[in-house]
Structure formats: C-alpha cells, structure tokens
Length: 74
Length: 256
Image 1 (cartoon, chains in turn red, yellow):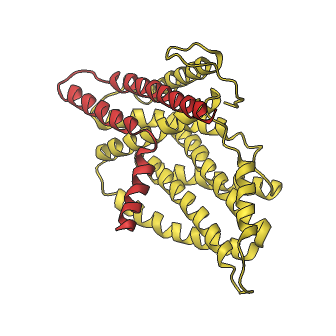
Image 2 (tube, rainbow over the protein chains, first blue to last red; image 1 turned 30 degrees about the vertical axis):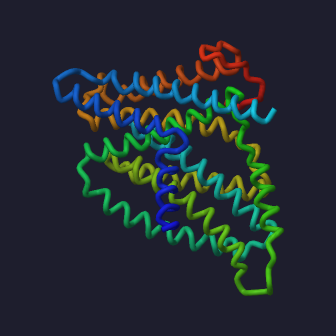
Image 3 (tube, each protein chain N blue to C red; image 1 turned 120 degrees about the horizontal axis):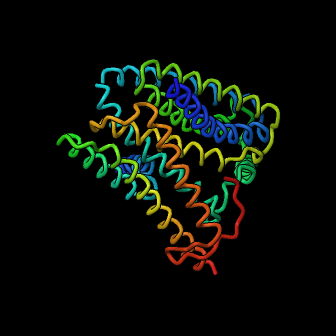
C-alpha cells in the first residue's frame, strides 16, 4: 500500500509540482479554448493570456510563501 | 525551419539541464569511491533507458496528432510554467539559487560516509547511486525527446540529435572540470528552458484544442516574445520593489 502511495506521490509531484493551480488553470484554459474554437470563434488569444495570468499568479503565491518561511525563520 | 531550429535549441537546453544534474551525482560518487562501479551503474542505466525509449516511442506513434499535441502541449506548458516560476523567483531574489557546488559536496559527503563492509567486485553503493541518478535524469531526457519530437514530423530525430549534442557537450564539460559544476549558470539555463517549454506548450495545446494560429509557425516566436517580456517584468518587479502584492524588495543575487 505504501508503495502505491509512493508511486502516486511521485507522479503527483512529477506532473503537478508544488503548485497544482498551474495544472488546473492550464486544463481550464484548454477547455475554454476548445469550446470557443468549436463554436467558430478565433480563440488563439485565450491561451497566451491565460498563461501570463497563471504565471503571474503562481509567482505571487511563490513570493508570499518564500517571505512567510523567511519570517518564520526569524 | 524556424520551428525545427527552436525545437533543437529547446531539446538541447532541456536535456542539458537534466544531464548536468546526473553528471554532478556521477562525478561526486566517482571521485570519492572510484570510477569502475560508478561508470558501470551509469552504463546500465543508459541501457535501461534505451529499452524504455524504444517502448515509449512505439506507443506514441499510434496516437492521433491533434490528441498528441493537446496532451504534450498541456504537459510541456505545466512543466515550463513550473520551471519559469522557480527561475523568476530565484532571479528576483525570493528563492536561493540552486548551488551545484553544494549539491556536489553533499553527494561527496554521503558517498564518503557510507561504509563498505568488504572489498567486492562491484561497489553497490556507487553502482546504485550512479544508476539512480543517471536513470531518473535520463527518463526526463527521454520524456523531453519523445514528447518534443512526437508533435512534429521528423521531430524525434531532431530532439534526439539535440539530446546527443547536449550529452557530448556535458560530458566534455565534465571531463574538463571534474569538479563542482557551479560555473554553469544553472538558473539562466532553467529560465530559458522554462520560456521555451511554456512557449511550445502554449502553441501545441492551443493547436490541439482546434485553434489556427495567425501567422502559422511564426506565432511561436510571438508567444516566446510575450512570455519573455512578462517574465523579465516579473523579475524586475521582484528585484526593484514595485510591489503590487505588498511584497518587500529582493536583496539576494541572481543570474537570470
């Protein structure tokens, strides 16, 4: 059982890393893009905008986390 | 042509990063415990990887190209954003730079501290540590080669050639320095790889979702430029104290 858990943990860490919101956001952005493209809308702009938003959000969360652990050390 | 060249550069850099990490482990164990078992472990790992690459390559070739682009693009985008995020945080002084010299010393200390019960033909400690390092990093290189290559015709050959070139360069560098690899500007490399992974990922995942890019393959350069500007702006904000989230100025060094 512990091996199954370790296996699952490995793949979770390998694919999702330490910010699962990136993976969730990418999945959501692809879904929105596919829906718009399927409806005949030129949806090429959705992914670049989503990627910038996801990057900025993740960097902000990472910064807060880094500063929190720095203040805990002090 | 542009796409092929970018593919080569991306696969070269991404593979190079993984190989530098594997080389650090091999050098540390080899220098402290001897080369025979260390190189044996690395060689067996390479053989195991060859089998794995052959198996995965065959399975991937039967998948429809749009499904492949969607899946590969999404994974590359996720990996790329994670690499880029960490590189930005390091370059902005929010995280310490990964220190290959420290990694080398830590591996050396671990290797020297392990007790060899008796003299054997194979030093299993060296073999295992070397095997694990080369195999795990090699799986990531194989993943890079197969995923990058499979979304473009003749792409596997281009990505494999890039990985082979990276291997030659990294091995040559390792043979020359045979010491801590801290001179390799790792964060700059990771920053660049993150940008390229995220750009390819954005391009392919959108194509897989049914999008036609304006300008065709040229859109890839546009995405790359957009992400580069956004990333440099983020580093600048972190370094120089424009703090929209109430963040304090960064003070630690950075190389990206």
